[in-house]
Structure formats: structure tokens, C-alpha cells
Image 1 (cartoon, rainbow, N blue to C red):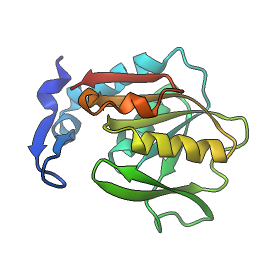
Image 2: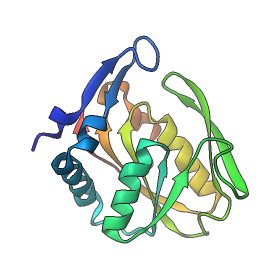
Image 3: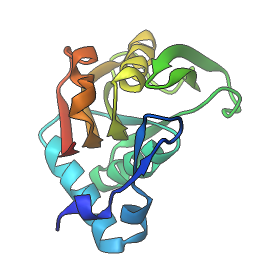
Length: 170
């Protein structure tokens, strides 16, 4: 199954000049979604890790599905003000601005091995920020996995210290 057939391009979203790779058509197709999760899982089966961390919103979908499939823990990374317990935060640059992410301060224990999972790897800014957040908490980022990589933005330049696996490249 060619998963690219289920990715919709939306020009000028969220701002002019950006082509947004929309995974919602893939998510609504049971076979495509199942295939996407299975393909992502195959890429990380040989990694030794304890937790998957993923940012909201679409990262939750793939990260939680992979955590369930691989019987690993899941840690949500949220925007400010969304988590009910004590948090730790990081600010970072986006493809089209700046943002802040938070996780519960007790989400990752010292020495836990963590994989970052998200739907799209664009500039690498979000993934890099999450890795720094994990490391500040004492976790060890052993790799990153994405459904889609926008290679023309050269995101791996920001992630040189991590193994990165993707299923679809643009």
C-alpha cells in the first residue's frame, strides 16, 4: 500500500509558503492507518527502549498506537496549561514561529530509554526540543521515529546525535 496516496497537501497552511502534509485522510482509512503504525513499528523493533514520548496533537495518535503495539509506556508532550500536574517546560523555534512544550516533571525517570515519535519531521525543531526536555529529566533519547520526513527542510541537521527513522520522505 502506498501511504502517500493518503497524505493530503494543503498549501499555505498554517501560513503562506508552507505546504502542510495532512495525515487525516490516512487516519480515517483503517487499512492505511494500520499499515502506517505497522511500518513505523518495524523501523524501531530492534531499539531497546522503555518509553515513547510524543507531542500533541497528531504525535499522540501515532505515539500512543506504537506504545500499545510494542507494549511500552507513553508520555504526552503538551502545550502550556494543558497538563494538570507539576510540569517542566522548553521553548523552541518552529518552521513558522516559536512555541513551548511541557511534560509532567515526574514523567521520565533517570536512566529511562526514550524514543521520540511524531507524525511529521519538518525542521527538526520540535523533535530537538523534546529530546532536550527528556535529557533534562534524566532520560536517554535512543532514537526518533516519524511517519513523514520533509527532507527538503534538512531536519536531520538538528538531530545528528540521534538515530532517525521515517516511513515516507518528501
